[in-house]
Image 1 (cartoon, rainbow, N blue to C red):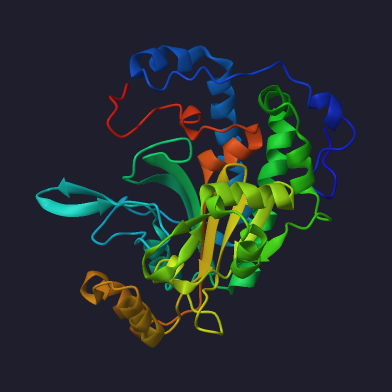
Image 2: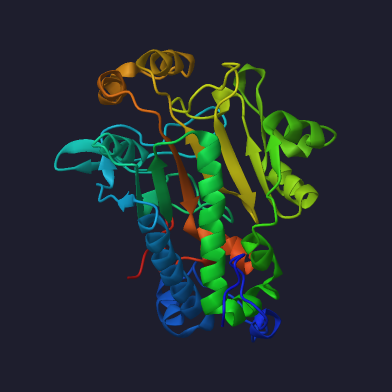
Length: 356
């Protein structure tokens, strides 16, 4: 199959996208049954193949752009993705060798550190951890593709879109029939791969205005703030054709490390919504020690918990931006599926026995 310059397969796309129906067995609630089913069911065979394709395509994409793979620990002394007021993520604390540490929700801080050795960009694909209850949108252990690059946020958003087109083209080339068997179509991926198609970009303010007539689209937060609810994300996706950026949120809605926009009210940050909701989170980081110190105060975070991060910003100021792509959420969009618990081959759900 040849690939067009847009990244989408030529000619045979429609024929390749005719697959036998593939349905998830939905046995993750029964770990011992899942153990046998995942060895032989077409759904999980397709998942393992697609994850391998995503992994290879990710490495090839970043290597071609001088963005280096980083080997980082999965434990850290501080919460690696500190909760903002708009966050629904909880950290996971464990005891390791007699000391309390956290399992990483993100290795962003380590990536920022490694960048200061003089590299243009660094990335990883690794498992990360969250402590909230699992559900159709949330896993307790999931896989992240994260990168940190020496650039501004607008440049980063363009890089993310190019990365997603690369993943889409690789999946179409290797798994079109399987995708069609699960999703019923490959049209959504073909559109993503076209460079002529522009992903809609909404400011947070514009998104709120679009949703203003429906209270279900918002969640209320302390201090009179409100954030867009999962229902609101789905409503935006219906309005925007299935994929959309929501950028420049109020700074209190994002973690303290995201840089201020020029108005010092909003953040240089954006989420990419696809399928079930947020699939990519991105942002530019504070460059100056002074802005970081101010942000810690505004977010009511004890500076002592991030003393090393403050020291790094003071001794080695550097403009960087980064993003994280949730692989399981991305596959939900690819497969047009609605329950993330059907994606992992090895189930690791809070409160459930695991096997193996």
